[in-house]
Image (cartoon, rainbow, N blue to C red; front, top):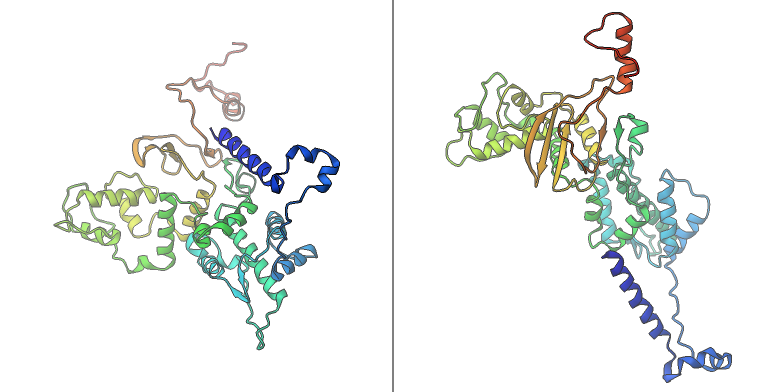
Length: 403
């Protein structure tokens, strides 16, 4: 279907091109095949190309010469290609920042709220015009160029570019990569976006899980947790429908109002606790036990740094996990099947050791085998089982040769 649509669009463009080239005054198109007719036929008026803005010309000159920058090579090439065809600046309006530029700069300064490092973006400062109102074109061009590169830098980081090769830089057991967008496309999208700041912000992961991590990170970073009441960690286990004085404290921490009695563990609060447990890597059963109580108070090893690390991993995930997906939580030893945002199946799993970790990957699931045959991998045979057998004792194994 998509190919047919594109072909139709091509035909429409071709037809309108032929119609545009038809000579005025009713001249027969066949006459243009003769050289003398071609010389005498009236020509369509030429459309004068508007000259580029002087700031754009200055940007081109800057990019044509020696140019020192910490920006990625792909970003520099994208900027060079963009301004080669541009007539107007992307961010400068007259001698000032345009409203779009102001919005982008504000977004760059708020990058920390999305787990990025705002200080890593070279945000230019636009010097005011001189007393006579004449602005320095070179300074305007420098600001224009730097802001474009800063926006591309943000886009790269938002999509996971800070760790460009997780497999090589972190572990061979991580089979994921940043979901980077071509920088030329980013510049084009920024130009056409009605709200470029919202577009840039939208390049961060949009999943509910990432948003939960982000909110938790901001709360810990800003010390909001310190102002919330502590949930007693030595209290008993609370299940749905139970009455407990600690329920009122949990309500306050999660911001869930009581329909009637604040110390009754009702369905609305159970759902909120399940979300909290899911966000903190706990079994989302809605039961408030010792681990959940510690998690409410910031225990369980949760730190701003660990939250940032998990947020970064989400930048390597597909934008859309699909309506149905299988979620393997290695630290929790649990696999979940999620459909339409609801967990429809949960099961315990066996995971690898620190020395032989479980691979981390995201792939499309096409086939499921029930009760599959499993054979010992050659690596386990050679590195674990065979050395034990050589030390003596069958250890429950039967060794066969040639079948």
